[in-house]
Amino acid sequence: MKVTRRNPDEQHEVAGPKPVRDVLAELDINPETVLVIHDGTLVTKDQVLPDDAEVEVRSVISGGAGGARCRGCRRPAIIEIAWHNSAFCADCFIDHVRAQVRRAIDGHAMLSYRDRIVVAVSGGKDSLALWDVLLDMGYRVDGFYLGLGIGGYSERSREVCERFAAQRGATLHVRELAEDFGFAVPDTTKDQRRSTCGVCGLSKRYAFNRVALEEGYDAMATGHNLDDEASQLLGNLLRWQVPFLSRQDVALPAGEPVPADGGHDGHAAPKLAKKVKPLYRLGEREMAAYCLIKGIDYVVEECPLVGGNTVLRYKEALNQIEAASPGTKAQFLFGFLDRVRDQHFPGEHADQAAAVVPCSECEMPTPPPDDGGRPVCAFCRTRTRMLALLERAPQGAPAATPPTASAARS
Ligand code: SF4
Ligand SMILES: [Zn+2]
Ligand SMILES: [Zn+2]
Image 1 (cartoon, rainbow, N blue to C red):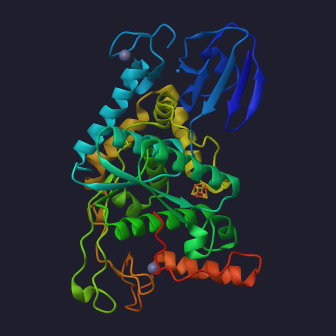
Image 2 (image 1 turned 120 degrees about the horizontal axis):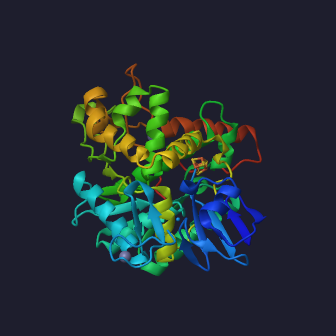
Image 3 (image 1 turned 30 degrees about the vertical axis):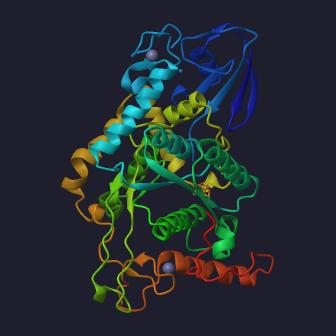
């Protein structure tokens, strides 16, 4: 049979007929990290593939039950979720995803039907699936896409988001980092202080906060899933990043403006919308399966700059443990959130507005400086550095307008 791997792209010939699990073993692929697609449908581990099959093995890490029956309706299953000890048909799997999102939202008072919500979409499976689930569940939810300027990858990502929004008749806010702020993510490889992914993450958080404030949203949702949160937790624990551990949460309540004397010139910092992660109970594999079943086109390829992202290594390590002992990942994360964090890492997690003042350059909220000087937020400091670097290298991006000049193009 012809086996095509996606991300990384490879072709293999494997003799059949053979069950999916043996094909994966022969290619040394961890079944927890992929979806197997034959004839346009997902196949499960025990399903036997014929010798002339054309099979796609799609990796689901971002940066299948032949004889099994669906837990809900006893029809043949198309996907099994080892840590739930369950298999599902397509319809019941969609119900399962919605039930997990409902449990996340209700368990952490994340969203109400009165809220105006904005989802940060990247073109990847998680954020588009989140937007889709929330729309189907009847929430008032728009999208936000930030163009990072990473060549064809960013262009395809934007197209995928725009197409999804058009198909669902939903509102998508689009901003381009280079147009609004004068630098693009590839320019940040020249920066000595922060990694490329560090500047990229900071820019995404900043632009997302900003669009939420400018457009008056009540809640900001991101597509962080179980794998993202568990690997983040592992990374923070391995390095004993106590402030990050105390802040790691799946729902941050809305920030309150500080009293009028808190700002550098007597202004209160603007109120931040609450931030939620409704997919934290669902894994990467479940989100990729959701997109395939719902026919959501997403960007399968990885960001070409992902090499510097250490979280990927933690994801791989957790997947190895999960393959041998299903459910470990969920116990690790949920145990921390429900029992450990507040006891052992108490702190600012519930108070994202703890002592913030307006940035003296862009007026977005930022912690007050220790030396009592002019408050300048981390993004404005990074941006100033980036523009200085680009000025020294004339082939860089054109000079930008100041960040306070809103460039709304919704
Ligand atoms: S891999 Fe790094 S540079 Fe690429 S989108 Fe993710 S955070 Fe940004
Ligand atoms: Zn079913
Ligand atoms: Zn600023």
